[in-house]
Image 1 (cartoon, rainbow, N blue to C red):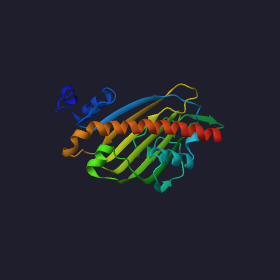
Image 2 (image 1 turned 30 degrees about the vertical axis):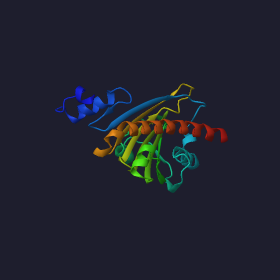
Image 3 (image 1 turned 135 degrees about the vertical axis):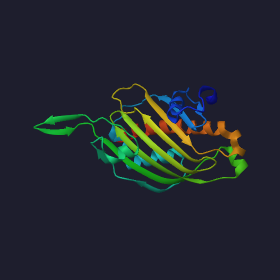
Image 4 (image 1 turned 90 degrees about the horizontal axis):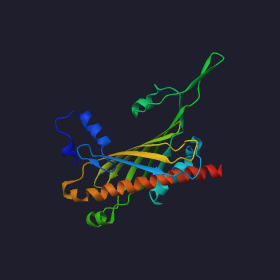
Length: 232
């Protein structure tokens, strides 16, 4: 499908724009980019503080693996960011606008951003048909870089040592902290490693597994934030 839309002589930027605007769940083959969007109902009103707990973040990661063991868990203390020039924003190409107020000649940032990094090891569930063929029961390494700002939760997730795909990179933006009960919109942009030629037939299976897993990740996150808030 992609080859029919774009000429191979177009500039890389043009290819990327084409990928972003393709219909949901279609993959841009040359970029190996999957765009996945889902709408989720909000069972409670959530605030940024509900996402900051180490225990809440651990439970999200644990439940996302369907209860598999998590080892080498590490979550850095949250960093408050009050300047658009902060180095970590540049590293992850994040563009935040900070509201400021001036009182008594002093400028105060009223909507700072917050950032943390999480890393851990866990096992990975391989689709049954591929597990039967390859005999793989591997572990994987996960790194998450999370930003909280205004109504949004931003996640940059790097999963390495993935069987068949080698790696998966997920960029997610979800407007989960809106001050009303309107649905949350979660947008995922996923890239992955090259699929070996002898497993090209499994492409649709792998794509379905990835998007299904991300649907579950979103649902777990919202449920965990509501649970944290009810406890608080």
